[in-house]
Image 1 (cartoon, one colour):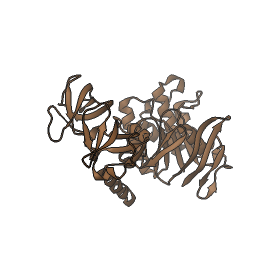
Image 2 (cartoon, rainbow, N blue to C red):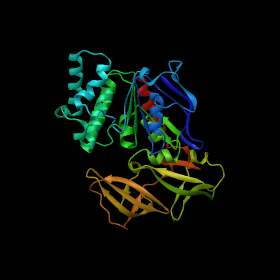
Image 3 (spheres, rainbow, N blue to C red):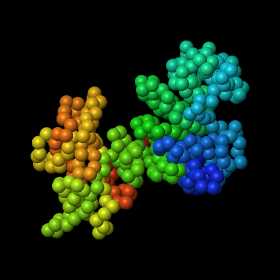
Image 4 (spheres, one colour):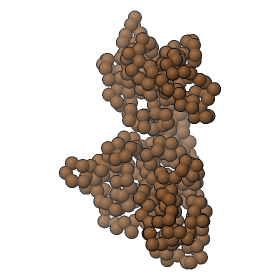
Length: 380
């Protein structure tokens, strides 16, 4: 296990790569570091590899500091986003290089190279040099050179980001299977939400060098710590509605900004209100809403259709509700026209409540699902 303890990396006087990072990389886990560009993801990977040193804090493996351990002595393999291939060597030689450094036999080297090439679909490229490969092909070679040799930790910096959609989907499965088969510890950096959720045993979400949340895919999806995590995890992202709590005849309501509709506040949400009327927002995921062409008991909030995205297996409808935009996943047979009024099944009891951008309450069923899934993972 590797621990990052109050790790900060500063460039110059005021530019920070990461700030006060505190989390652990557990043995035999697939940890995904996820966030937008400039969040500090690659910096974190380089700190783990020893390519750069932290300005403050410590990295500890099994109780021993790694700060004085040279990169080549850390038993880690890294695939860089910029490929870092030897241009004068063939693909075969690039793959074989780390194995020769380990003084493996010629037969073992050839077996590993051929097996890795088949997995990455580059068997027909083994005689070529990197200069004669496409960007996606070079990325597969760089990934192969990282995973071909045994290591205690594999560090992968967006290893499949330049692949086409079909191969990228296949490689996600291969990486997940590899982590299980080899019982490997993997830290992977990505900017793709679907990739993070599909691959990670846990996901560490960074923003501007700060750790926003770390948890299982279900935890960060169903129980986001703040609006940034809620909006950045999941496709399509969570929708938000500005609200103002009001009381009428002893009953609490959420008035939606710039909307005539209002939502009754259930008791489990009412206890989290602090008496303020500003700063609250409700969040809802696209898959948690249904639509109807006519108003009924379950569909009471009108929305004006803004755009429809036809995905083949489903449609994603974006509808204007007050000053917000609510996205809904529907069956592919559900159609609507731009500016048409549809009715949404918005219910505060089944929505996420945020105050000053921080989550203060999640739907009970999602909290229970997250706990159940976490218990299942621990049991395995």
